[in-house]
Image (cartoon, rainbow, N blue to C red; front, side):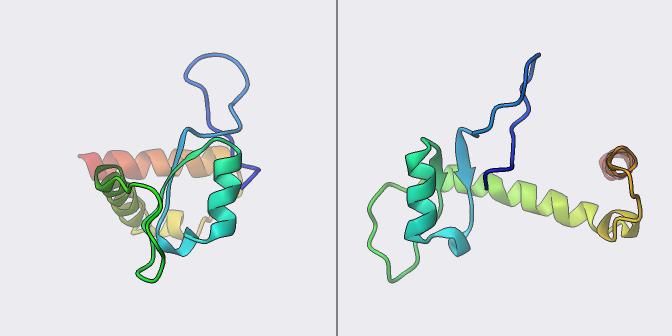
Length: 105
C-alpha cells in the first residue's frame, strides 16, 4: 500500500497519496479502513452483511470501478499482456497501448 504513487498531470514528483480508494468487500477490514483514514484517503468500500454501517456508501463512485475492471479483463484477453512476455516496462506499456488501440477500433 505504501509503494504506490499517483502521477501528477504536470511537472514534479508524484504524489504518494491518492484522493480516494475504491475497493471490493475483500478490503473491508477495520485495519485497512483505519490505515487509510489515518492518512486522509477517502474510501468507497461496501460493508459486509454482518458489519454495522458507520459511514455513507456512494454507489455511483463504486459503479465506476466496474468500468476499470472490464477494461483490464478485455486487455488480458491478449496473451502477450496476460503472461507478460516483455521484460522491459517500456515494451510492456507499448503492448498495452497497442492492445488498447485495437480494442478501441
